[in-house]
Image (tube, rainbow, N blue to C red; front, side, top):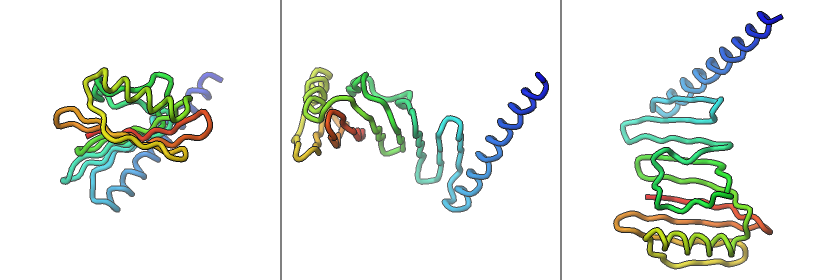
Length: 155
């Protein structure tokens, strides 16, 4: 019985690795970029002469080198992250309405030394931009009831 369970687990792992390799080869043929796929962790990495791109979906995490001075609401769930040589984009789902989400970001980013630019909040959609030296953070927010989707873009 134990041998059967171990065999099934090994077969599943082999199937996952095989699927990863098939996807990698397909992406490499179509894009010309070197691909690394890990379906178990829902991640994709592409490397080409133009640069590198890392994409993670599902219950994603912030990139390890994500700047500590960029405010991230601890109550928000990270749904996707995308990192390239040109910047990063993280999509969050916040349990707060759009008005309080905008207010939190304005206050916390200013506390962290960022200056705020123009802000909009019209019909459940909003945006705000922050600058600090040569860095820039842009937020696009989409509210629905008491929840807000946040697309945070960092350069």
